[in-house]
Image (cartoon, rainbow, N blue to C red; front, top):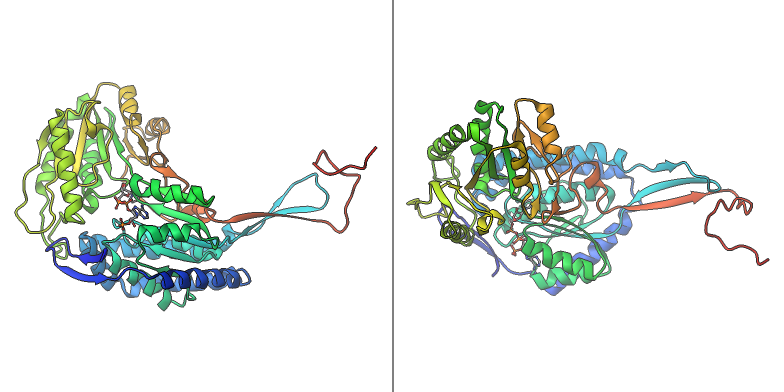
Amino acid sequence: MAYKTVNPYNNEVVKEYPNATEDQLQEALATGHDLYKTMRKQPISERAKILHNVAAKLREHSDELAKACTVDMGKLYRESKGEVELVAIIADWFADHGEDLLKSEKIDTIATGEAEIRHQSTGVIMMVEPWNFPYYQIMRVFAPNFMVGNPMILKHAANTPTSAQMFADVVAEAGAPKGSLTNLFLSYDQVTEAIEDPRVQGVALTGSERGGTAVAGAAGKNLKKNTMELGGMDPFVVLGDADMDAVNDIAWRARLYNCGQVCTSSKRFIVMDNVYDEFLDSLKKHFAAVKPGDPMDPATTLAPMNTEKAKNKLQSQLDDAIAHGAKVAYGNEHIDLPGQFFMPTILTDIDKDNPAFKTELFGPIASVYKVHSEQEAIDIANDSPYGLGGIVFSGDADHGAEVAGQIETGMVFVNNFMATLPELPFGGVKLSGYGREMSHIGQMAFVNEQLIVKTDKPDLGNLAGGLVATDPE
Ligand code: NAP
C-alpha cells in the first residue's frame, strides 16, 4: 500500500491505508458537485460559523493532531503544536474576513445601467498537498475555498495519511457538510482522472517541480485553472552593516526549523565579506549545538527527516556537491540513531557549475557564499531557477527593503525571520510556481468573477463603442 505512516524517529510502520477505490472517487465527485450546487444558495455567514468551529475543534484536538503529525513526518512536537495553532488562526481569519472579501464590487461604466462583479464559487477543487506541513498546507486551500463554497477533494502525501484523515475528521466534526473536504488515498492516475472530470473546476498543488509539472500538465490539458506552490532556494542576504546579533540568532533557525524541510527555508546565505567570518563561526556553533533525539521530547532540537528516501536523496546531493568542489565547513557526519537523522551541514565554495548552485537541498544543509558588494549579493540571490522567498539583513530597514525589491522572488522579509500568516500572500515566481495562497489574493484563487450588468430597459442610442450588432444601412 502506498499510503502509510512510518515513524521516521524509529522506523516503525504505524498504520497502512488502502488506496481509494474507483467508487470512492466517483462518490466524492458526485457529493462535492451536489454540495457546490447547495452552497451556491446558502449565505456565506453560515460557512463562517462552521469555519470558526473548525478552528475551535483544531484547538480542542491540538495534542492528538500534533502527535499524529510528529509520528507521520517526524517534526518536533512543539513545532507540530505551533502548526496546529497557526492553522486555527488561518481558519478564524478567513471566517472573519471571507464574506467581506467576497462581497460584490460596483464598476463605474459608460454602459447602460449598473455593473457589478460578483465573486461566485466555481465547483469542486482538487488539491494535492505535501507532507512538510501536513495541516497548514491543507488549510491554505481549505479555508478560502470553503468560504466561497467550493467543495474539495484532498490527495495528501503518501507518508502523511494519518494527519490527512484527522484533518478531514475535524472538519466533519465541526459541522461542515459531507463533501466539503473529502480525503482520498488516490493514485497519481486517479488524480488525473479527477482533474479530467468536468465537475472539477480548479486544481491546487503544493510540492516539488516533479509533482507540479505532472499535475499542472494535467490541469492545462483539461483547461482547469490551477495554482502551483513549488520549491525554493531562498537567499538570506547579510549586508555589511547588519545587526550581527540578530543575524546570528535567526540564521540557524531559518535553516533548521522543521529539519530544514521548508520551501521558504533560507537555503543560501549570501554574506558580505566584512562579516563573513563572524557569520560562519556563529552558524557552525549553532549547528553544533542542536540535539538530535525523540521529536516528542521537549529537550530535542533536531528532528529526523521525514523518510529514509528523503534522507538518502539529500546525502547523494551532498556527495555530488562535494564531488564538484564544494567544501564542508561543518557536518556531513553520521548520527548514530536508528531514525532518519541528518547532521546539519554547512557548504562553502559552491561554484556556479556545481549542481548544488541551482538545486534545492530539502533538508538541513546551508550553502554559504561570500560576496564583496551589494550588487554581487543581489546577482547571486537572483541567479536561481527558483523565486519563492528571501530575507535581507541591513543596518537600515529602508535600505534593506530597497535591496529586497531587487530580489526576484514572491516574498522578502527585512531584518526578520520569514513568517506566514493568513493576511500575508504566499507564493513565488519562476520555478517556485504561480498564483498566491492566503490573504485577499488567495481568497480569489478559484472564484468566478461574474460580471452582471442590469438595466430596466435597453438604450440602443448608447452603443458607447461597444461591440453590438448595428442596423444594416
Ligand atoms: P512532491 O513529490 O511534488 O509531492 C507533493 C504532492 O504531490 C504529494 O501529495 C505527492 O504525492 C503528489 N504528487 C507527486 N507527483 C504526482 C503526480 N504525478 N500526480 C499526482 N500527484 C503527485 O513534493 P515533495 O518533494 O514531497 O515536497 C517537498 C517540495 O514541496 C519541496 O520542493 C518544497 O520546496 C515544496 N513546497 C513548496 C511550498 C510552497 O508553498 N511553495 C510549501 C511546501 C513545500 P505522493 O506523496 O504520493 O508522491
